[in-house]
Image (tube, rainbow, N blue to C red; front, side, top):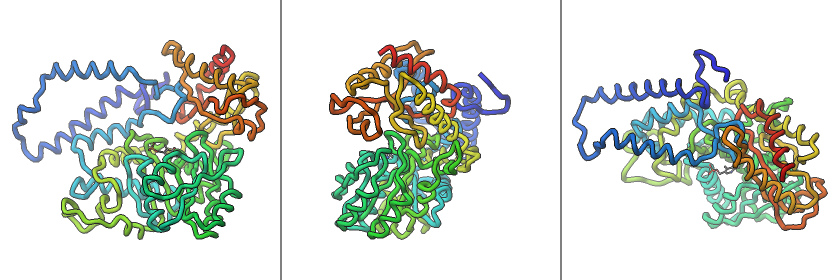
Length: 468
Ligand SMILES: *Cc1c(COP(=O)(O)O)cnc(C)c1O
């Protein structure tokens, strides 16, 4: 393992340094607390230290029942531990436990939230914005669809059939009709089908996805906006997974296509999940609106909060009430050391993108595996080369199960993705669709370490597939 003096590494290599920085953080917060003068702790909360240590040991035993999300041989779901800076930021603020609902709940982290949201707006190139953090991409999308309903009452929401299921579900919750639109062979929203739908006048808002959760397919946001504007419809971009790829949307060999990501600047709203590619712990999504006047849809009064100032309280523009100020502190501290620039966080995303491209090439040249479709981001869909969908399904399940059952130092973790025979046929794969739906393999290469491990990963997955 390469270790550089004076550098804090992410992952296991950096844990000793992280422990030291966390110790400093606890001490510094404690020194601020002591300025208020000492007081006697109430005995009701006293616990024997030995009991806590024993219970903690039990907890750690229980936590062993996990998949190694941190390891490059884990290429399953979109999961990875937060950056150490996020851990330090979260823990520091958590010791105080500010609530970003209102400025009364903690002015410092509310100010940090406004700063990090402004950074996200700048990354997307929004000329002005209204936005806030949320506890997830689901809630962030709910807020965007809520505003969509308020601005276009009685109109439906159109989203691609491959968009996240949350859009259909949240539309139901909001009492708004949601219309799935056919996808192209690339898994993106079909513009002809969209135009046919817009022609009916039923659609008030179109949801575009820059990076589907399944395959990382990027909808043509630029063309969707042009089309939607012609029919007076609003455009919401679900960039929960793919938003940070804006940093490497430069049309270079190891970047991604710029047009869809640049067009986000012209969308009416956008959602991004810092807890996916932003190196944050769970509990951190964000929604941004292009028109700050949508704040009127959130109008409410609260007899409990909003006392200390006339300045905007975040709770006045969000549907959630209590939210962890610690989440804002974590994101703020992370952005201080890895800013939202191509050389900052962009350099964390680029190796995963290269890994996806390199893997696509290896799979294309392999007898054992077939590429489902070319990756647009860092998610690769592929399958064991077999004649029937039932055989592909069985072999994929074998790769998933047998990989996980290996001893830890050789274990491999992939994910599966359910497709129909027609999905394979549309992509030019000659497979007998003998069952309605079957599993193919899906890997998310969201850790920069994936790149160096790729040749091994490919070889081992091909081996498992051949054994099936
Ligand atoms: C993950 C994801 C969501 C849901 O976000 P959560 O943070 O899991 O609630 C919505 N849309 C897309 C495209 C996603 O990838």
